Length: 206
Image (cartoon, rainbow, N blue to C red; front, top):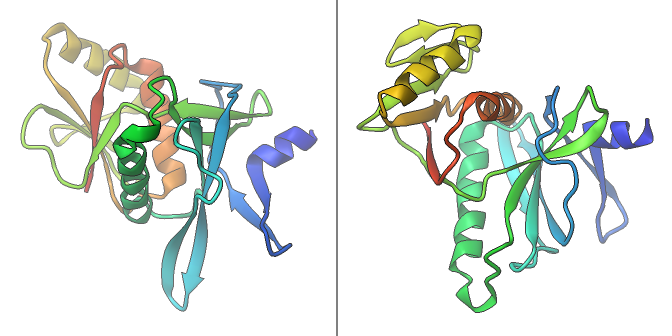
């Protein structure tokens, strides 16, 4: 139970002696359970008046290790992804200390297994724009899903994706920039469960 609580609210002891908390996203399945040789990176939820801010702490990151991003689920995607892009570029560009086996993961809480879990995103390239080609699968802030502007239920999405794959068409996974990071990660975990092609991919945030 202690480990489960830790997975819901991640408590971080910072150098000044204060404790910080990050509310992690939740899901009902574990993709990766255990990671060794890791560097934790934190993106905190902050407010300044009416403004919401994303504050990054990567003091303990080592480029040759697996990076685990612990991100507060309340943050809007439009603030999170630019910071993630910066981190990816930093790690990909550090050729002097490169480890081809090191991966990047997002952390979240598995509410069924009651454990901390992880989803890899090493091969994801983010684009802050609408795709110009391919079949657009768009996850809106209100929870609706559209394929090329046609509404589709979550239950029918796998069937639609399989039909597209048979035609060998490019699928573009797109997300509303105003969605919360928590909702984004839940959608990402769902996509992982229905997608058969998991090579280098692009994700579009707009």
